[in-house]
Length: 144
Image (tube, rainbow, N blue to C red; front, side):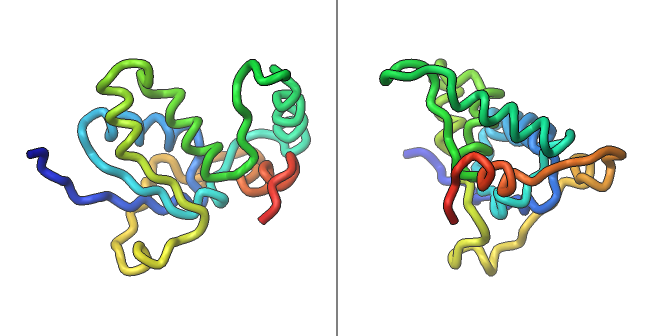
């Protein structure tokens, strides 16, 4: 029987999406189980208009039931970004991806849990503009 490991809870508030995704992917591949809370507060660096226009343009790719799936919910956007950094077509990558949970806000069962932040990927280290994943999601059609 497989030993269940304790889940690590990471607070995504003001963390940079790409850097967070790469660090989480490494930890998942190492066997850690991770919950990310406040997915809508994770940030993407760059100019707001450029990022939102790129996302809107990306929604038009595919069609007629073919092509990639484009998510509008913040937690699914973050989860998909992390999946892109995992070898998700191999068994160890699928197992790692199954240990990841991403939440909008903080669910009741995780309110009492100790939440980690990763200072190396905090947006205070950025010296440029950024936009939150929640703002991007609302601009492309997510309804709270």
